[in-house]
Image 1 (cartoon, protein in one colour):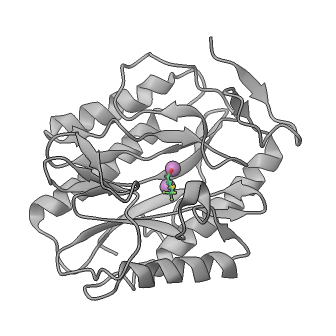
Image 2 (image 1 turned 45 degrees about the vertical axis):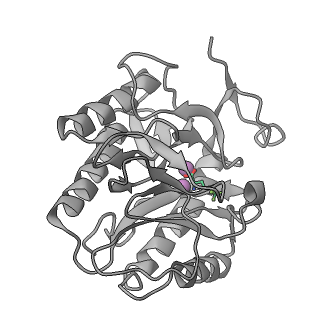
Length: 274
Ligand code: MF3
Ligand code: CO
Ligand code: CO
């Protein structure tokens, strides 16, 4: 049995396994945090080029986050010390910024989460360094479609599993693999909260979606098999078969007749080429 709880000021920070149903104050907070997150990614579009290091991109994310009056939620999160995650080519997610330089043809995910006035705006997009291969560009395009097809399922009365079912069907129709080890999540005053939003599921399964729920949808789609492995740094997840992987993420809130995307690009820069 799923439990839902209408959020009040004092309980919204507790992780008790229930699905929180937020009110107008939450929507206001998430709009601002989500907008800042999207603006940060907008700013990066001109900076992602062959030769730039992922550490330089991370420093820019930190600067833009602080300038926006927020802090990067990833800094100090479970021992993570950077302002974003940057995942190149066969890295599935949680790539750690470093001295590594992007090279011509790389496909790159940058995942940012400003924490603004107590609310988390969690979003990621793919970027191209130069001109990737046709198959890489196709993977990125279909992964963006997967995110938007998942979002299109979201309305009160639908089931959580409808999201994953739609994503899985689309990805597998292209013979891509849907990563199972990482999923979307509830968020709000907490970075990661119930429910787990899986990206491969059975339609009609899982809890009912209700107005007031906040969650991310963030499918990771592999050009090859769905399987991942974790590197020794304890963070970096890569495809087992070394195939390319892509991901996009939005933070959304369920409304009476569908959903609101908090992290849409104000400039329409939601997917490459930018
Ligand atoms: N932003 C990631 C997500 O979408 C989480 C990153 S946590 C970190 O949920 F510690 F790896 F940064
Ligand atoms: Co997320
Ligand atoms: Co994220």
